[in-house]
Image (cartoon, rainbow, N blue to C red; front, side):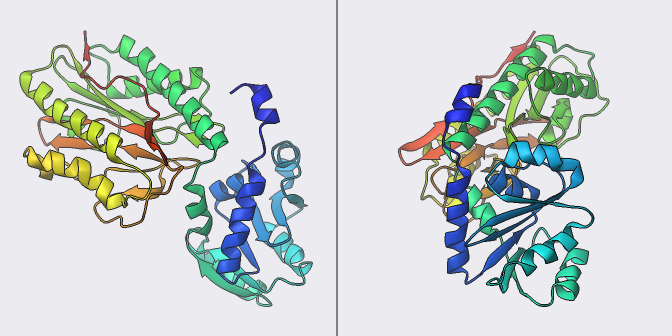
Length: 370
């Protein structure tokens, strides 16, 4: 998408606010206090680290401080009424609410409000009725609009090009930390806003640790090298994992890798809107189990990605929620054997009414890095 396309494309924030207002009506709420910064950005476009939003049936108000006076003007525009608060955001909140005469019942995000801030609601905001809510905005965020999908695609492209650069330089003797550093430098070179999480580089027997931190171990010929990483484009994340072999793969490495690759392919082809998260998970899990490695696949199949790298919906054994159209989810089966190594192949998949669209284009066959 070109810069001109971004200017002329319809602004999706009005539709997002309309959807939230429908939810408030069903919850019998006059307003919602939004403190999750990811949800603040989704509603207003504001990417700063200090902000509160009040959403009502009539208006959307964003409170932030003087550090962001210029940034908020550029990012938010007319999407919300902006209040630059000279001191505490909470003092500004009481002032803003005081001017909303029809607002009495206000929801707050119970998962994102620290205890001290909850105490503020009770002690300083006692004139309003405060009601805890859970994932009202997050549930709406599961369905990605066209601009969000385009941003995720850009983040995937950045990650794939960075992986190409790193694999070209992979060699025995490099430490995992050096590879992770090179990977994150390549991500920056490709234009990534930052990193959704610290890049995982795990080699040899350490690749059996699903969430290993890159360490001082030096790569050796015959190692599995597992790389799990992502990029950020306009705030939206990608999340990709590829596992390669440094040198020539053994027959056992090839055989186990092929099980994971097929599990990934089956789940990526089967996942679709209307399916429960647990049913999507079962596609890959049952395939791996039937080939004798059920106990070696200990984590869930995947999760949603967007403004946060881990968001709804969940694809797991216990996830009975229905997958919505428009969600972008990871499909990341794995097999991990202590003392031997591990394999994970992770792709980002868009769920559409016409079926799944695998957004990740990077090759999935076993790469042997000479």
